[in-house]
Image (cartoon, rainbow, N blue to C red; front, side):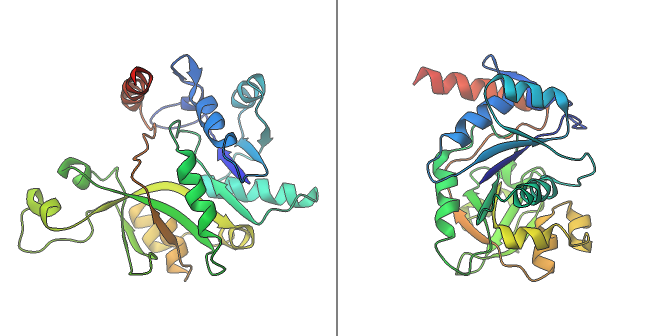
Length: 251
């Protein structure tokens, strides 16, 4: 099952799921991308806002209304799955695709689904190579380092690893760095446990909920993708998204 959390009350960009991109709301782009993926039995938008719900229903999407108390999209996904379970609809795996990711790639979702062919995978996410020093040093880009089996060791807003003895401008020449792509998939039994965990100290420090899971001993499988999605956090990001869309249409 794919769940698309979408909220209206964003601090940096209020109403961004309904902002128009190429003449369509951002949330519609996300829905179209996600609902086209084979291997999914269900896709829904999870929101606490009637304006978003009405927009989704207008383009033919399915909506589940949730409470407005959730700290994260993961918590919102947990409520959706609980409601589904109470109705007798049980899923093995849930994929969380944020409602501000209009260019999520179907191949990325296929990669996450495939990760659960391994019985020990409980949580899966993605990373993509960092290609510029500006991208590497920006705290808005979350970095991830993994062990030899592709399991996350740590996520940070700071560059990881720190390259001792070299200037930051030289780091990409000497080391591969990876940015976290914020799409998650969970075994639903695992997700039920995650949403009951209290916030952790590392999570609070970096403002990254996945650190709560690592602190509590959960392993996170990290696949690699070449596609670097354009998420929309600010009105300025919309300009980059419009340009990206224009470039796609020119091809």
